[in-house]
Length: 64
Image (cartoon, rainbow, N blue to C red; front, side, top):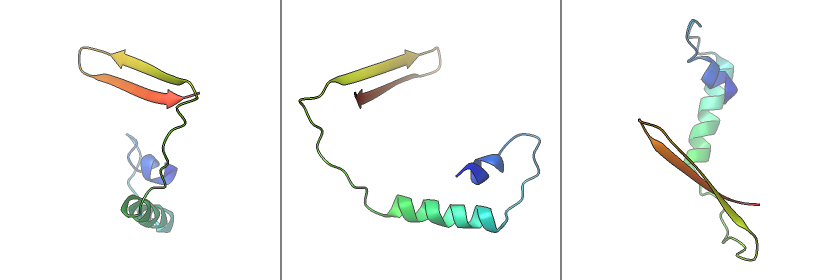
């Protein structure tokens, strides 16, 4: 996805080439397919990180 991100950088000329097209199709395919999920192992430790500002707040729950 780096090539798609690079097309949006400030001061960079927007060029849609074959690499960007392939990355776009790959991304669409991944977003349209089912993710492989499984229940968490509750025997492991969970951690949460939080951050906030005047504009927004965010949090991430993860396992160690």
